[in-house]
Length: 250
Image 1 (cartoon, rainbow, N blue to C red):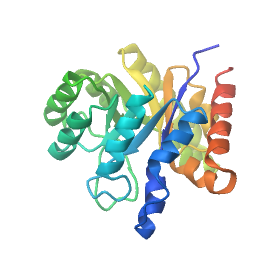
Image 2: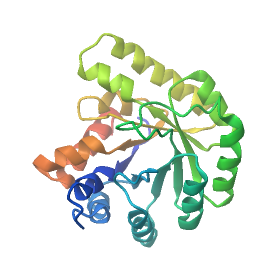
Image 3: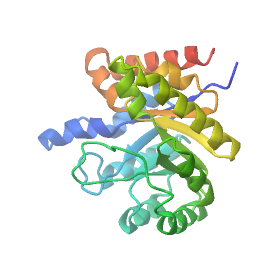
């Protein structure tokens, strides 16, 4: 029986609902508090350059609340000077560097660490010096995993979107994508990187991913916030936690 995987809950889309009306509610900080009570091990939030959901004030309040509870904040952000300054100001437990394009609906692929080595390496170093565990959101590609190791990241988060899309559609190619994730997780682990995974995970797709023994943490958001509309956030998180544990033989 392998170690219990952690669950990071992404609360971005609570802010998306709030911003649709320009109101003060629903409050993503309140959602984060409920997520912790329901079994989340930490909270993830993506401060996008266009501030389409999470705001600077949300990050400031999340950082204070989570520090008081000694629970981790995982700040997802682009590799820009503005975001570096914000991260250094709030000093979150973890920072996950992600690719970001203004026209995308959501993060569409992994960071090109191999191609962007010279820009990413000093960025990682500054964050690590400030005490953050730096994660790179990448595809399960051997070259990108090797590059993540070379730039000094402590963690890689493997992009699970392609597998989840194919699995939900019942496509035969889903097995090949899952095997790619398994190989990537093994490679990263052997290099001394902690392995996380996320993007597009729901109740249907979580078990095969959670069963990968090298994966220490799953970060899940959009599905949980959507499911909360029907059964409540605590119940949605509790069911996800149950399925993760069952997949790992807990």
